[in-house]
Amino acid sequence: MRSVVLSVSLCVLAGCATVSVVPGEATFETSLTRNQSELREASNAYCEEVVQAGWVEESGGIASLADTLMHGRTEVADAAGYYATRIGAETKAPALVLGRIVADSQAARNGLADVTTEAETLLRSRDKNASNRADVMSFERALVRAQMAHRGFQEALDLVSERADMDVQPIALEIDKFAGLIDNARSIADRLAERYVADGSAGS
Image 1: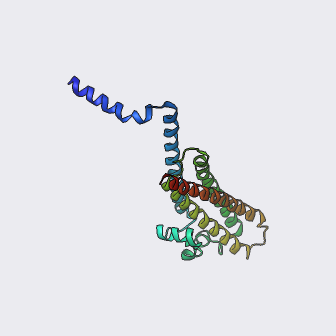
Image 2: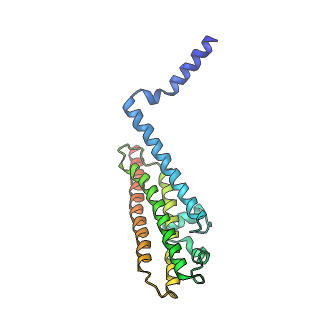
C-alpha cells in the first residue's frame, strides 16, 4: 500500500514538474494560459449575447463568417432588417425605438470592450506563444458579430429617422462610438493574427 501511495505521489509530482521547475516562468505561463482561455470564453460569450439579445439573427456559420472576414461580405444581407423589424423601427413610437437603439448599442459596445481588453492582454505579452490560433479565431468571430450588430443599429436608426420629428444626432453619435471601438478591436485582431503567423514562421 505504501508503494502505491509513493507511486501516486511521484506521478503527481511529475505532472507538476513543468510548472514547478522555474517558479517565475511557471507563474507567467499559468497566467498566460488563463488569459488565452479568458479571451476565448469572453469572445464566445459575446457571440452568444449578440444573438440572445436579438441584435443579430442566428444564421450562417463558420463558412459565412470566414467569407465575411476574407471578402468583406456580411451576413446582414441574409437577414436584412432583422433588428429593425424586431424593435419596430417602422411601426412603434419613435422615442421608444430610439431609446432601445441607444440601450442596445451601449450594451453591445460594453460587451465588446470587455473582449477587447482580454485581447490587449495577450497582445502585450512578450511570450512567443501568446497568440494562439484558437484565440485569434474566436476574437475574429466576436468582431464579425459586433459588425453585424452595428449595421443593424444603424439601419434601424435610418428607418426611424425618416418618420421621427426628433433630433437623432445623440443616437447617431452613440452608434459611432460603437463603430470606433470595432475599428480599434479590428486593429488589435490584425496585430494578434500577424504575431501568430510570425511566431509560427519563426518556429518552423
